[in-house]
Amino acid sequence: MFTGLIEEIGSVLWIRAADRGTQLQLSAPRIAGTVQTGDSISVNGCCLTVASHQREQITFDLLEETVTRTNLGALKRDSAVNLERALAANARLGGHFVQGHIDCTASIIAFAESDCRLEIGLPEDRALYVAEKGSIAVDGISLTIAEVKPTSFVTWIIPHTRRYTNLKNARSGDLVNLEFDILAKYVERMLAPAAGRMSLHSQSAEERGNGAQENL
Image (cartoon, rainbow, N blue to C red; front, top):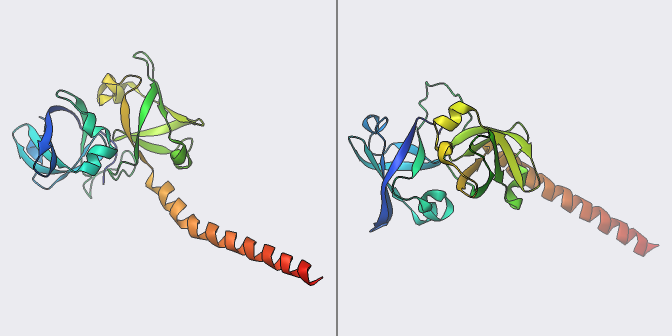
């Protein structure tokens, strides 16, 4: 579990094919010395397990699913990535609950260098998960949604967030990882059976009505 508060901007040393998938090695001088093999680290919002570490470097194994469904597969040498260690049980929760499970990727529509307004595309089948003033994780950054549009959403970026995350390098057209608020997904899950029962109830009522007409 993470909070969406980025601790360090890491830099890609290399990403390459390995015997059992893909390996990613990052330079992370600030946190590399504090992690252990097996620890969970959020990399651009994606929960990865530390495979090995030494001095200022951390290495991860990536599954094909991870490479395919996130923007990690598009990383190159020197790419900037957002890093956050897993939340300690006695730590403050400053952002929102972020699982590190990426729901989808989307492209930045507009983000000018001198602008605080960030607009990101919103896949049609994911639109129900966003709400004005709700939370969303963008490349692992906990952000508040300011506006919801039919095919996009808007969030405002404060100078601190831009300076201390990989958004300082972000440009229109860049692909970002999105994780929607877990509460929205649970609500959808809980309402689905109820919606099914309502549909069956309505169908039964209609059938009863048709039957009554036939008996007239």
